[in-house]
Image 1 (cartoon, helix red, strand yellow):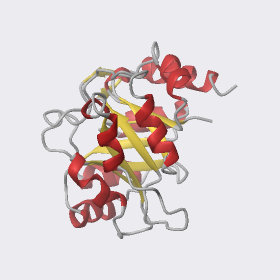
Image 2 (cartoon, one colour):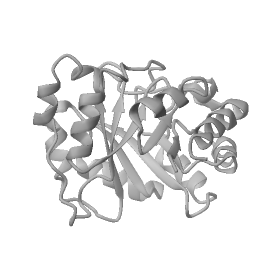
Image 3 (cartoon, one colour):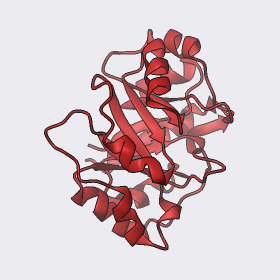
Image 4 (tube, one colour):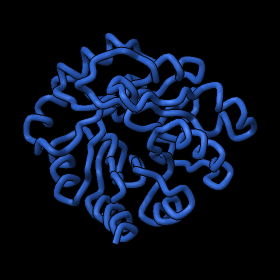
Length: 226
């Protein structure tokens, strides 16, 4: 069954609605330049009211390991998702940090579409016997100016060589960027990802979810699993 993350959660009402609709994970953005930015204190209040089986994922952009883990602990998170500069990807993949937190790394697909060979240099094969490695790698449509929440897709067909590198290296793959209920089925058919991650495609406005869009998105993904 495809893993579903509803990201950019800013309030308890949206969080509970997404859980009720069938989400596997909720994302909380800790990035000052994002309109969906939240504080550890606000997230802690939300997390305390969520079921234990729901993943609570903190989203960070080019922050130190120490900073990320401090925020994660203060917020009560169960996982961290880091948008890395491509030059730091290998470093984060091998990071010997807190193994109690699941780890996800986000890679901007657009930076590699014209030079797939460059992608091999950014990925190290996963050590299957170590819990220190990320659980999955996200392919997103972000840029250095806007790491996530772009509302745009990337070239799914053109990214297949990247997807194969990720899989051969032993990582699960999550597709993100510009997804919504109308295109997520196509994305799954083309990329066959382990998971999907959505933000703007299920919003009524920046930082506020549209319940109908959230339910429609999750329903479309679940149909692919039946």
